[in-house]
Image (cartoon, rainbow, N blue to C red):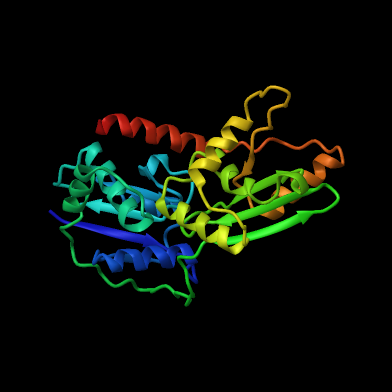
Length: 287
């Protein structure tokens, strides 16, 4: 049995792609690096047939066949045609990669199965056109950006995760009253936030960065935030948190258009909904 792992990169490689290359290298998993063909649908269809799967890496990894691809894949995994790989095997493979690349947690039987399947390799060939990989500093670091809309009393806070294509932008209205603390709980309204233990470590560092003079206790804050969303005697419930999967500039433009009375089209994140639903179906196959 043999397999090959291909990482598709831009020229030069993005921080996310550099992270993936380093992650595979750190766990001694040989890879091909393709800086040419990742954006060519015909090439992908011709070279990655039934015994191949594509991986799209974000907060977690999504699995796709060549027919299911809706965007440029990050990784392709191909086994020899004479090797039988069940659907549950593919799920264990990518979830094992979630453990070693993204820091997610999965049951031991999934980890062991995925690790075993990735333990046999063909020797990677040299590409004719090797990619240009730019040097980066501290590529594991979460990026944090803020923008205060003073007249609207609204704070925008953007978080970029190392492997994510789309950032999280939290909108805190009535900022003078609510303050920065709501940022730490608002993020959890996004179904894909908090799936990695690194998300929690980042929030602890952000708490120190904002120099909040209180004890950090995310479990307590989440409970209190949930309670505030329900009617209380003599108090109106708080509105649900607002978190966009878009850059801060895009969210700022949306808010300005809304203030000006322009019609704003809803953000239809169909791909995100589909991958979450598919992940739930895959969970049932493993149980």
